[in-house]
Image (cartoon, rainbow, N blue to C red; front, side, top):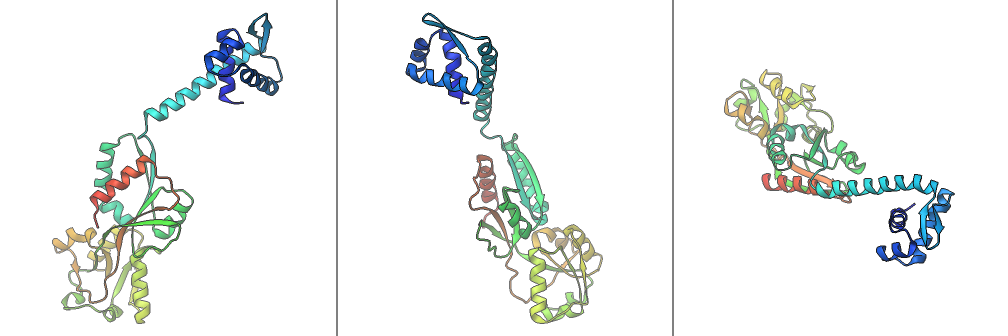
Length: 294
């Protein structure tokens, strides 16, 4: 059953004849006849009866045309609704905890001010999780803190370098050193975030390659808790500097003078290479690019 067949049915009923309906619609009369015959075969009933050169609906035809009118009306309403609200949509954004705490609130506030009708859903995780979620279209885009991202199915945009800070309690013995080397970690306690986190992986690879084993590891999922635990004297940690700037300025934490190579972390936006980017997604991407410049 096709919309044009329903339109033909209504046009013939309004015109009272196939010939007049064909003229009104711009079809040939045989085309209209074919439309009605196709409907009649599908419905297994006659829809019109002839009275000379005029036609009128059968009883079954009168029953069916009410549904045909409702179907076409619903089609028109749906089309009008979509066309009148091109900016209405939903965006599912995957975000790392650091980005969601530090940068995301102001971005969302600005975005919602300009696009109040767009629904936003946030999903939290790390790059390993978001790689699968983007592939399965569970999230539309992801904004993550990570090193180099090498997934062939993903498009990656580096937004900005993200300096990392090796932080310690203010009374930690390593604060007395002019340089801190990886060997100094052997006598230290370390507080790390959840598995899959890019900077936890960096720490583990660094220690493993140097054959250094810290005195202990405290594994904590929440980076706010990590910060509090460091301030309480429970160990060292590596966190994005932007996340601890306030505490560093207030002398609640100390950034140790790390002598090793750069951590190589970047805030990056990621989406599937084959993803259709809706106007809503494009608008959010443009906002991120303009506010977080590399």
